[in-house]
Length: 555
Image (cartoon, rainbow, N blue to C red; front, side):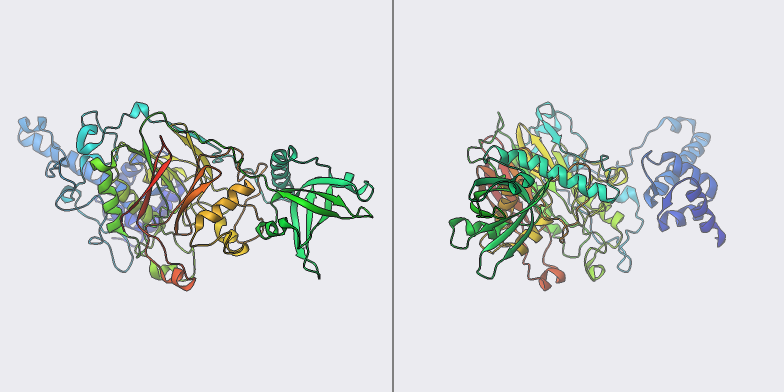
């Protein structure tokens, strides 16, 4: 192979607007007619693909080979030109058995390079196949009757609200930051003004001393005085005003729940000189205690999982296999939805020395591997996915949904892809899906009894109380300034589903079923260094007709 051939191929691809895997370039360079092979590969490439992969080239070359082979046979034996062959004709599937003798629905490492983590070429005709129902296509009506599952696609109902994909307008200019904070204040203050006799900060300054007053503001500063009282600076669109919570007041305990940049309301009495407000009561936007959740009008269930982390050496493949197998059983009848709250893959460069813990070192290969695992899930299930901080999307929240290339890679089940966070309504039950990066900050800032890794759902309660999934700006959670704050919880959800912290926790807050679904990854060295012992291999199952929760363990 001439040395200039690969370089010429890469240059030609770049001129046409494509990137390429190294193996794809090698396959093209080795082809008998490199230019024809390149043209054929690009002709068969999906319209929205930006990267030429080895499987694209291999498929194009095999198609050309089969055409030449059929042409040769038809010349020697005209009768054979009418014959047809199925590429999977040597693979038989027993639909009644839970799996084929050689499992391939989940990828193995037999054909993976130890040094690079890249999958090596294999003969596609000899690859084993997964059961028909797990191949990621919509099954026929007769197929839906197999193995205890009877899913009527016409009854599946999914609506998505709050998807900001394609709506990002932030440029990082000062005006963008002003816009997102104004939007946050205006929308959250509306939820509080009905509870207090709110006055703007500049109006408070003109009031005489000893007057009763109230203000709705964004927390711009919290500090303790020399006497142990709490001074809270509140800001609205007109200015700032200091408020004081005395340490002996019953509400003093609420100060420990406050985060910077959240919106609250306070009531109290102005000082003699009118320069400060002594607080008697403090209000969060909060979920109404009278909230009555909606339920489905038929028996149907949803599985809620997150943090799969395919590509990690610690990914619990056996647990995933058991989960997927269970979904095909009579016991899982009625589980028609699968909601995945981010971190499909382990990603690359997410934390220090992560490369030493990777089983697959290329992030696109990780998604290819994840797609293979996803094929084990019954093809009739409706799947909704949001990204997480390990996924190949921007880190700043809100995170847009996966791009077209990654969607194509994970297209086995015709899944729904939406942004992080999003409000997903299934069968009339609204589920707020949020990956949960801000939970680290909430747990770090608040007392253990309010928020901890051992009880992650309590940290989620705090987000519901604040009606915002990432209230504190400028901390560890990366937030993108947009003209609209997509992280506000405008509508009260029936279910709040998050992940990220790799701990299982669940409960109800003002009738909102709150679930942190754990993970599918055993403890990594990094987690060990930060003292996190993950809860791996759990699948919370929500009965949408009753909102009862059952937690299944497959670890």
